[in-house]
Image (cartoon, rainbow, N blue to C red; front, side, top):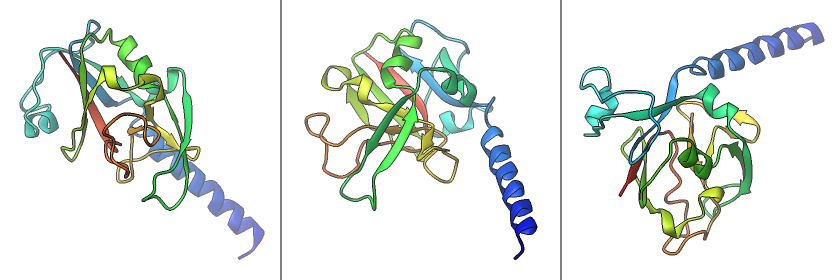
Length: 181
């Protein structure tokens, strides 16, 4: 393949990747609800909030964030690896601490829910929320649906008592955080 064709293919592929990653840039990718002071949306609607309804999640108000909103928050980086991973991964995104501060969270536990229904619960007194990253990038690439994105909760191994040795608790395709009493 000659150089000009490779260059053209490279440009086309780059534009495709940028288009896909921007496809949900201004659509809601993460919702926080529960014991929060700051909200920007009303209650769940059985028809329009089909995923929430399917997972029996209801709230009266919540705070929605788009990918662009998440990009505008301070970005933290974490390079980590778990025994069941083929190699280390560097993720970046806002910290759980910054998100909880943004919404005025006032609870004792959180549930981080993924689109497949996986929903680990964390006692806030047992974790360092500044080391929990809501990753929107891995190895400098935006996370996509079908992979681990668009939002992936990542934290280092052995960060809290009772954590399993594998990557249990890391929540890929996270779309909802519920703050509970």
